[in-house]
Length: 302
Image (cartoon, rainbow, N blue to C red; front, side):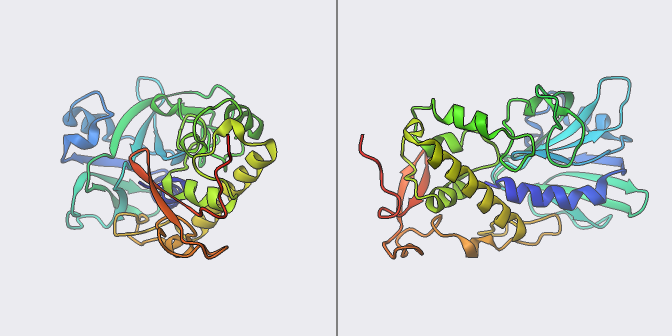
């Protein structure tokens, strides 16, 4: 599943192309791409046509595009890429993409006409049109916006660790009261957003913490070290365009990121640990896999 770096790469690519553009037509080919939208595909198309996109913002793994107002409250087009969703920029009239679900045609005052294509092989991604509500802390809703507004469907999602409004003290407080494994806490998007399986494994490896260590058993120093490593791995992945294992993880131009070449633990089961040489272990965890070094990341005794 795309995580913060992959989604941020998409946001950064979309923003200059669609900010200020008017949506001239909408084609919703597959209702499964509108599972977060309460109306029909026809209603979705009508609600977006002739609206102006005023920006592109992100919180965690959610993207949204604020829309020019009509007769109702401020709204945004909200997108979640799910496991395999792609948002691609294409020339007008470009052939349909494989697994194409939704296509927006937009007219930008500087760039002219473009197609914004949502393609999704596994159909877990989705679009919605959602009201924007005030953020509880009064800070900007997320990356890419200065407005203290967030879509109602995204309001429960915590800020990500690269967000200037992320509170380290609150994170330490929550972690210190969790009796579950620290990796489970990192995957909880209501505690810290944008971190998924890949970057959780990488940050835990870098901070020498076993993924099944009880969160509340971690010292303040260990939590601070973990948070620092989360930020470091996310920033490095952002610089390298995200992690791509196959054609599903691409930017708006269809180009893959190359952070996979920098992974130390994730996907390296059986390979030597880059730090000590002991084979990386792969185990089942929450219907996924965890990768860690049994020598560098020891499970504390209770």
